[in-house]
Image (cartoon, rainbow, N blue to C red; front, side, top):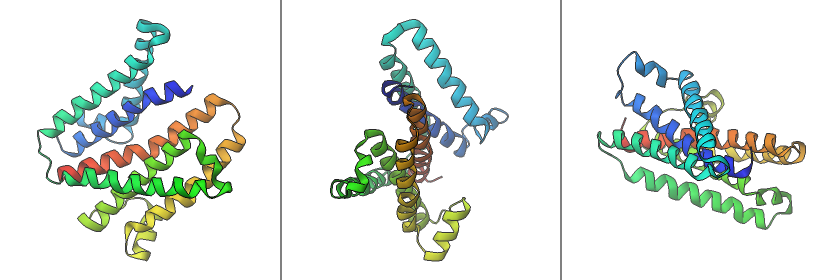
Length: 220
């Protein structure tokens, strides 16, 4: 699990998230739709991703990375084309989520340049993790505070009810991520294991961010 493989796998996170929204939109009939519901969708996306990886490696050898990533992007584009048939009722949410998430992630990186204790954020994958989770927190904020959606997880729900706003998701994310990333860089010396752990953290932030944002944009 080197850096190139990690980056080339990111399109499959987008594909898996958009595939989940297809089920949210009731565009797939039973019994096939059950494959797109948690936890079966995790196994489905993993199997497809693994198959694409193995075939790409066998066909293109050492130069498989770009082709492997391209297949993931094509899958994502297909899912988005299917979803576009519904029409985007709140398309502005996509831009708003990207802007807010980018601004907050940029603010975190600005603080990192002025705090020696945050130098571990120089790692670009740590920066990607922060960015992915700021996008997730932004999508939760818009969903809960602007559209009346609700958070499903226990701790965030408690804190949102306590404070009366989903803005609490931003400091909550940072309070968890910063010590976790610090410990990962300090304790995991084996590059493959460290990169795989960081890919998992990116997925945990980016996947719900994409799903939430698409659902809000589509009005479902």
